[in-house]
Image (cartoon, rainbow, N blue to C red; front, side, top):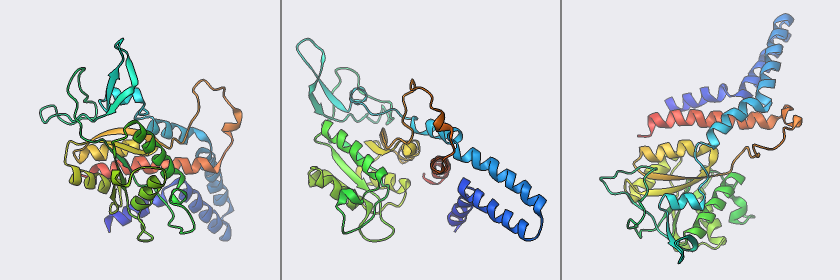
Length: 302
């Protein structure tokens, strides 16, 4: 009950809800003949509309979120002990001799995301776990599994597939339920992976979770605390996902995907980007949702 009330209040204070409520207020004021008040509220509406539809506020919030964790490059994977690096006769790194491997820190070392083996240390041969966190899909029988996935979910799958090709012995985990039927997000993602060439025996499903907290709990329950897990999720969502998995006792590695704002820092400034756009409201609300979700799940997901 408390969670439902909190969610309702949160929805009412989102930028789009604020603008809609103010429009209703303006209409009521005009109806009762309070035109001066209506003009005052109208000016406030215009100011808020410009703030929410121009890219400044949404850009700042999104930039801070989606680059919290760096892209999981092959070099970074090697640094973190996810690849068993081979060297050629000259002692130089040779990616063709890489073998998939995962380093698990011992109990005395602890389980942190920054822990990786020293040069020459023995590597574990346990399979790498790669989890694709749930996003959304539409269970439409006319479509193939890959076409049922939302754009966000598809990009998470692409990132997981990239890692799977670097770690061909990896065990992939698909996750999340589906509120509108029995064909869960976990099953849809699994079928999409199989259609893209992943072996069915290398895929585990978590069809029950309804939140990131539930996904982390399910993983730790099945694989134990301290287990390293590569998380493929949206860059905007990565900060919250990492926090939740760490709280549950896992040792997560970030593999961000589905970046919203993509532009080279050295790219010339384009005045057209300053024009108001409704898409900026959507991006702003996505960022606000992530900040609110981070605070909420940090308190409730223990």
